[in-house]
Length: 94
Image (cartoon, rainbow, N blue to C red; front, side, top):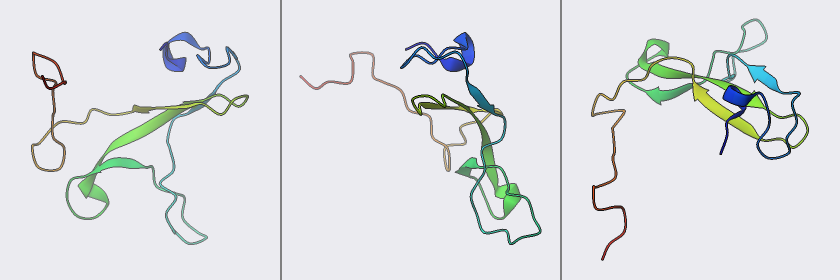
């Protein structure tokens, strides 16, 4: 599937008027005086510093398709973020 990020076109409905959201909101209760923090994909420790993997989004206002992308590099640490790969023979059992 072609991405909205690379083509500027929605792959579902072919709309070319897209929305770019540079920081996806975490939607947490911050009260009335604080801005929403950005959504972080992975918990890597305690507190706000213990989160990583900030996201950005591209959205089609016509059909509602949304694509999420990492806005920052997210490294596999083997504990909180694990790397997985498909075996050379494929994912299906014989």
